[in-house]
Image (cartoon, rainbow, N blue to C red; front, side):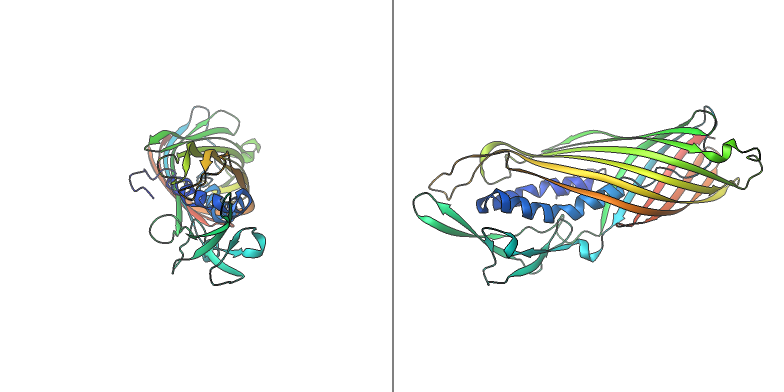
Length: 337
């Protein structure tokens, strides 16, 4: 994983860059390579969808007309041990076996590490020599060791309209660095129900509802790093998520506490694109064009607790989420009530 990339979407960079390891399995056939890629990448993309949905709010108290807040936010979802490995059962594959004839083994996902290294034997049909085999080392996860956190970071803005309505937007400007291109944007609508109550000014708490949408694009150019002949080799990923959240918070002058119950729904789709010519170094096979697509989905309830410190124009908040992937987040906020 390339260390020069910014914290923003660092996780996705690591995920898509691992496609150069997965495409080596094309020798086993498209169906086998697709099945492995799905099991290998799914925990990473699912964890990322949880990470990118943290810190959409830091209070249930909606801003008045013209009130605004600009935030710099850093999130990270935590990785459990069972997200670092998946079971590779050779009965589910057509042309992949283990050299020691094991029926199945736990192998690394994009978040884990094979220690010791794990090899598979790939069987393929040579047009002249007939049935042939090749030994391939299975890829490890991102970085040189296992990953325990999936970070994201972005800039976010919020603006109060009126009658308890607040609109929000977050984005990461397009980043082009070496072979990687990344961008992200999102929008949210928060509505405070307690603003419509006659006793709003004296109530010690505020209650709001939030709906937020986030979209992420990522691409990785594999042409120079693939190791397989061909052209225009790349992986392209699109991720879309929705967050539905009920929020409650205190209404104190300096330190406040907030929490809520929400639901995350999202889908991540990745396409391995381009032309791939699998060869044994002497003979060339037919080119494989746009080999496969994989996808993963999340559908999870989430609980949130957090606190916010207000010092005039400056605010600082921190929160923790309990869900399929637990996540924590901090925000540095500047604004006018």
